[in-house]
Length: 167
Image (cartoon, rainbow, N blue to C red):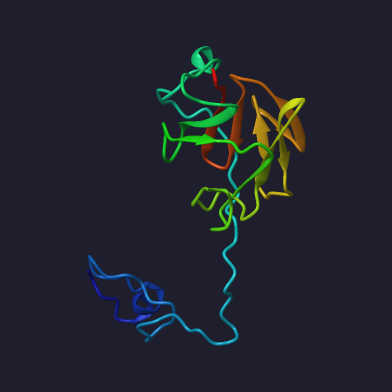
């Protein structure tokens, strides 16, 4: 690094952490301030679903009559935890980043209380809970939608495929 006689470069240079070190929350401190000015909120990052290329763990073609599943299930088709299956309860299943959600999706693109899946005598529906990034069904943003086997529901970075059991 060359030094400028005016000393202006020192003012413009940002302090970079050494490899293996994390940047501190305030200049000259080793920890983040927990004072009243510190925002304890954990905002949701804005995310627009794209057409990321990947190989789905489960396809719409095999989403009907899934062996061993009673009722409806959601299979993570793409995104974190691809291949994981969530069997839906017989009434309402909440989805979000809040640890008390029935389906906990720990990613900043998912709102704390993102959406809910409702199983009724009429079938399965998804209802958005006022999420920041919205809930998408087959590529369209929805507030509420009736679902059937093979539909894709996008919650943040998670692409969930609706599956119907054979039991």
